[in-house]
Length: 326
Image (cartoon, rainbow, N blue to C red; front, side, top):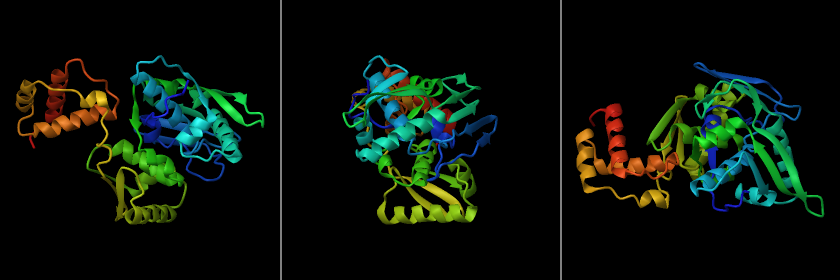
């Protein structure tokens, strides 16, 4: 039962990485196939068209609720039950008749879109076709015939990602982004830039990862417009955007780092931990590494460790092995 009203919005990393959802504002009925190294994704629409970036709000709402329940050590299920009104409010939507009709259409597209892929979620390689949701049912309606309560069964692929915590927290202003391309660009920044100070990607590669079918000239114009609007209003959550020489740069606004769960903020390290950390990570600012360690646990929903000192020293050791001396 989805009844946690302050659940932080979360998206699964696989669909943030790959262009699963359509950014078209018209019904998209093309079969798509994307390849990256050995991985491939093929998305087949139903007669209603592909599930869209805005349809993804339903999955984000369900994933957020399940993750919040897991963090509260509550039992969870692949079948989720929620009030349509709660979902619409949580995702910054209207609650008029048109919005309820739109939710039915979104559920239909999510059920009808078929994914065939070998992308691994939860250490399982899925090579069969499956829908983003397996089924949905309108459990109860109002007297006027408007949907009131909905039941959804998530696909194994999505539920595996949740159980193995392959999810990322999204900024709540994500739902205020109206343009599908803005949402998709934010998702890529959240996935690849994360807590890093910046991340760059070529315009052509960005177009591929967005799943855009526009010409390069038109895509460049659309991205430039988003960049100019962001420079004027700062409306893109978490990351500022810039475009130069067909390279898009995401610059961290540091809003990703600002919220740490109470359980993680209460962790206290033994004074000897800092001495041992300096030994395994010589030359590094240990207090900066401590902040990054807490942020990393928050980012990936890592539970507070039973032995914080051992976990922190292990984090510092891996950091030094990866980056060497500063």
